[in-house]
Image (cartoon, rainbow, N blue to C red; front, side):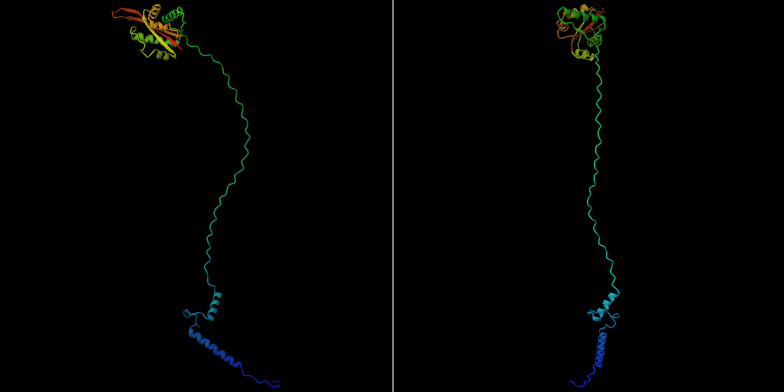
Length: 257
């Protein structure tokens, strides 16, 4: 009321102090009873920490942080190599090629005349005379003369000597092959006809014997032949009675080139 003198209220301070002391004593007794007063000497409890433990744990974590192992770096996979293409050098321009030199002119070809055949000369006089008489008989009948051939002359002479040694009166055309074989060995490659005669060493007598025999006549007078060769072997011959005669064996070869 206005004008009233205020009355002193009740003393609140002493009461608050008494309640604070009582509250602290109650807290301390409860802590001792629960074993929280000496946390370092007590076994860990399964109860939830109170406000004080949470504050102490936070401070301990702040004061001494728990060490952690250093982080292990994760292996970084190696990058997959990407093939690279080697740069190729630019090709150099080709060097200019010199034009080829003109070929040398061919060497002059000198004409060489063919070699003349060896002279067709009979090995003895009897052989030459027989060839001459054969051509005389051919000319008398209107046939061309046969040309003496060196290869045929050699082949005829060799066979005449071989045959005379084997026996002049046992005539044969095959003592060392056929007539064409003998001519080929001497160097003659054409066809060959052959005649053989044995008698006294007289060209006239020997040619007459050929002319009197049709098979021999057809050879020495044949129109298909153009070459001739004659060879004669002459020597003593003894007959069965012991008589010795001078005997000649002649071989005549007519050739077709």
